[in-house]
Image (cartoon, rainbow, N blue to C red; front, side):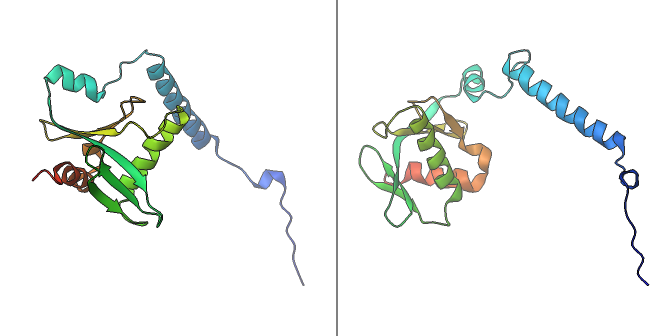
Amino acid sequence: MTIVRTYDDDDFRVHTLPLIAMGTVIAITLALAISTSLGFFERQAVPESIRAERGVLSVDTRSITFNDAADGSVWVADAETGLELGRFPQGEGGFVRATARAMVHNRIQHGIGPAVPFELIAWDTGAMTLRDTQTGRAVELSAFGSKTHEIYRDMMAKGRE
C-alpha cells in the first residue's frame, strides 16, 4: 500500500518576522549609501584629505607600466628606464594582476590609452599609493595587507639600491 500525501499551499509557511527584518536591513543599507553619495553624510576616509590635514609628504615616486606578456604573465616595468620591476605568471601575484587589470580597464572606459604611466608613491608614513594621473583613480596599497605592501615596496626599491 502506498500513501501519497499532497501539499496544499497552506502547508508551507514562511515566518514574516525574519522577512521584515531582512527587508529593514536592506532598506537602511540603501538609505545610508544613497545619503552618503548625495552628501548628507560626510565621507570619512578620503586618503588625500587625511594626508593633507596631517602634512604627510611623499618620499619617493616611480612611474610604472603594466604589460601583458605572450605567456599570460603580467610584468611591471619602470616607465623611464624600462627595467623590469616584477613578473607575475598566471596563478601568482593575484593582487598585482587584479590591480593592473582594474586600472587599465578604467582607462579604457575613459578612452585613455597606455601612453602615460602610473605613479607608485611612497609616503613618509610608510604607506604606498598606486595612482593613475589620467583618471584620478588611486589605490591605497597598505590597505591590502603586508604581503601586497612588500611586493610594491620591492618594486619601488628595485634598481635603486
